[in-house]
Length: 153
Image (cartoon, rainbow, N blue to C red; front, side, top):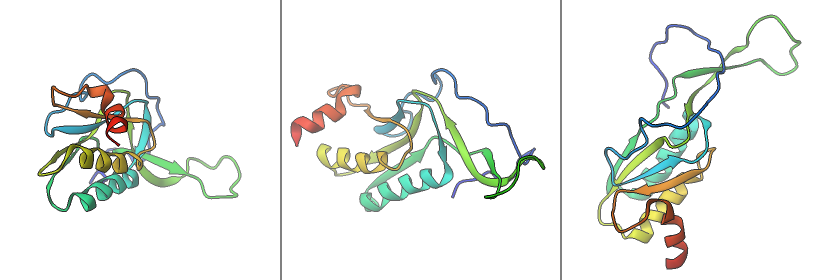
């Protein structure tokens, strides 16, 4: 799983996720990608689950780029513990994701358009927020890939 090797401080404030993402909102590496439609917090386990889901189906016929990194520690107090006595122990690593941020990018070899959309749908289900499938191709409207899939199927 992804986690930072070293941090300056062990614990952080929760913070808020405001506004849209302008940097990191375009495809840079692959020809397809998953773009966040709503803001949210993605844990290291969820990133790993999405990566495993897509690489298992790709059968070494492509490449995956993960564009987010979980570098914010989240703490949690044990069950049935009274209030007070300081902040809880470290629980997991998360990555705050803004609206419009590219989460993952993909390049596929020798796959039909329908197969690609079905693969990306499997990956999409592993993430905790609403996600759009985007592509670089000029023929397809970036926001209408799901509608095109419904027409094909």
